[in-house]
Length: 380
Ligand SMILES: Cc1cc2nc3c(=O)[nH]c(=O)nc-3n(C[C@H](O)[C@H](O)[C@H](O)COP(=O)(O)OP(=O)(O)OC[C@H]3O[C@@H](n4cnc5c(N)ncnc54)[C@H](O)[C@@H]3O)c2cc1C
Image (cartoon, rainbow, N blue to C red):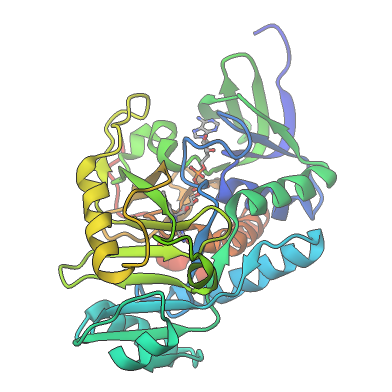
């Protein structure tokens, strides 16, 4: 290339939830930041689209997540105040399951450990309190009143706008093809047409992350999930607008989730995904997944018509234990690897972006991110 690479302090790869939040939090301090995004703002090829996301605080996946989600919740509310937009709606979240469910027990334990307010219901109490949902004998429910729903496209746009106003440059349709360390210790980032130099690099590339660190052989598996939107059978949508978000754990260890009707139907998804081996050739939504969701609706939300109004595919980037990976690249503390998905990462993006930005500036990652260190990886 016949020109000198443009120089920045920080480069963030990926303008999904994690990359945009990180860029915003980097922008509050001295230094120039560039975000390079493969597609365009709020595209639907990654993991951060789909109109709603659930934020739960009583966290079945582990107590380590609770301080993180509490900080994230505060930051989402602050983002809403700063922009005058509704980013988070505190609908509360119901966690439902068979009464002997291990997931429910873990959620209860995390609520206890952090003195979160929560309330337990038997099937009768739950039916009365949450009339859109059908509970039967043997069910139990845990009410997480601090939970609610996030509006992901709005949140990402808000962080991008604020970051842009504070001087962050965004380049759309700019896939990063490779990066390497220079002899001077900086990072050279290449796209098809340009090169950039930076002191630090944040790789928040979602499902594409392994292509940017092939030598690490990250143990990530990409799974496609289709979310569907359903309307009330008899046009009586009101109970579905007023209902809380929910996660319903099944006895087999899987789950279904739903968010209230915010104008386009009740969104329902489950964990019957499809493995994606080639991101450029993704499977069509499977009938098996839709049928499994319809069976769930029939038994738990019988007031919804079973034919979906709309569906959208979305990607989970799963680690073997469904936790996250957020760590420095083994080559040095100026490249951060962010794989905050495993299907439950959105709610944390505000806090993770803040922590990652602090880590990048200080050269050491904050303690709250310690549980998400790189697994022992094979390096070429
Ligand atoms: C159906 C579904 C439901 C979910 N529900 C919830 C929920 O209720 N609550 C919750 O907390 N979480 C939920 N999640 C998970 C959550 O949405 C994700 O964890 C989160 O959005 C991941 O954000 P990300 O920034 O890591 O990835 P992404 O949003 O995919 O962003 C990565 C970005 O990097 C870009 N990129 C990739 N490679 C390159 C490259 N080489 N150069 C430049 N750019 C590149 C991509 O184009 C993309 O924009 C759900 C996920 C799905 C799929």
